[in-house]
Image 1 (tube, rainbow, N blue to C red):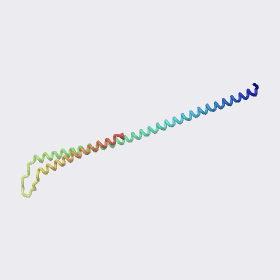
Image 2: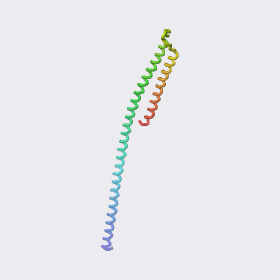
Image 3: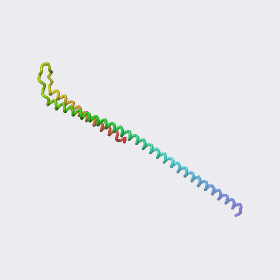
Image 4: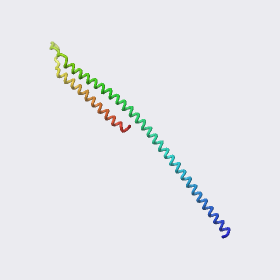
Length: 148
């Protein structure tokens, strides 16, 4: 082999080395870019998850406030209805204890049975309203539970 051939072989080896080195460095650069992209995607996903959790926490807090407010209203309504029912029952009991009014001229006769029936109807209506309010509250709580 002469020097010309050796030089050609050396140039070809050098060119091959440069091509291999360039490809290897390009591959490393590409891998670095892909790693940065994966990191950026992971950071974006984490931030989105944190934002969604924060939004859900706010919704849960708002729902808890609404449920507490509705519970307070329902408790007040139940207490009021219970008081009314007790007052009606007390009035009914007192009306049975009171002596009948004497038949005075000009006084209208009021049948006691009619008054008792009306009190029974009012008590039943109050108790029914209590039950309806309780059912509404339960339904509302069940509706809000999935959002919590």
